Picture 1: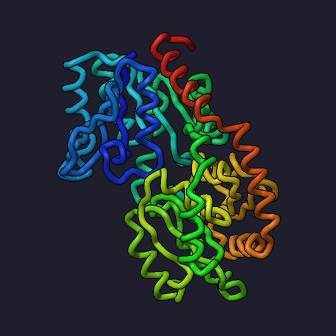
Picture 2: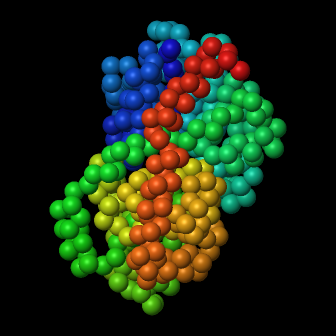
Picture 3: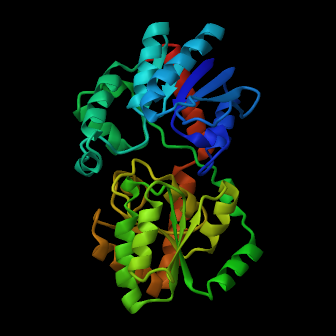
Amino acid sequence: MKILMISLDKGLLGKGELGDVTSRHRQYGNFVDQLDIIVFSRRGYKKNKISERVFAYPTNSVSKFFYFFNACQIGKKLFKIQKYDLIVTQAPFVTGLAGYFLSRKFKTKLLVHYHGDYVKNKLWLKEKWYNFLLLQISGFISKRADGVRVMSRSIKDKLVESGIDGKKIRVISTPVSLVKFGNWDADFSRRLKEKYNQKKILLFVGRLSQEKDLLTLLKALLEVKETYPNFILLVIGEGNEKLSWMDWTEKNGLMSNVEFIGQLSHEDLVNYYAVSEFLVNSSTSESFGKIFVEAAACAKTSVATATTGAREIITDGKTGLLSPIKDSHALSLNILKLLRDEQTAKKMGEEARNSASKRFDGGVNTQEIINFWQDLVRDRF
């Protein structure tokens, strides 16, 4: 089975990797004859050999407006070398459009992924002026795709309500290797605690982009600081909103309580999960929220806004605490509750780990993804 994938994740090109994207795709390669990945990128990248069966090809576009055309050009060249059995796209938007074009031209099956919560999401529609157009594209592509993979049951339900055939939709969350989170560097944890003068460490992990809405979390922490100043938020990740959020942090006197760490390898990230009190997240849109599973694997609970993804993973009051989206005051109260009650935070962390070990097995999810590919290729629907 030969797969052509179209992705947005530049980590596959060996730069700026967030999380375990390379190792996951290397694992996919163990189940197929060939996995070639076209990655939307600006200039300056080279073809990346991930394994003997997995290769990533950058579009090296002069502008993002050329991503579609450059991806199609690369796709046509690759199809001249070999015939692919299935095209998989990371999203139902421009990657989906490129996948649709190639699938029709070369009469190949098309699988579209929904890694975000876009459908019937008013907050997402308001984020950018062109999101309404993207939503129309996603509907067009999804109705014509041979298969659709979503991260949660809620997303599937919304797609079915929008007119997408439920028979071709499968709920398969992103595989998470829980085993690697069982081991961390105790000496590193001790040094980190000393570095921050034994302050309680809160952790944010994710791209610093608009939908992550870090500003709501910063506003919540400003309230928390008034009554409980002995904490430090470590922000792991990069993104186009980083400078504006750093500027807000400085102007509002939070620099002593917030540090922007930048991007970390997945191996180093495990140590930060381990040393933290709990994970905090204020996104306006999450379809799954792999970070909640990763934190849970380290026996850490999460305080988050009630996105589709967070509700799918976190049982409010048992494995974590949820607050309304954009409500910084409610978020601050939940953060304060766990800062003041270490025993409850630890108990919720243990409950989260038990739940994650039962519900999110990376090996099982990987096999379900491969099975979906095989079923599409062999018309098992």
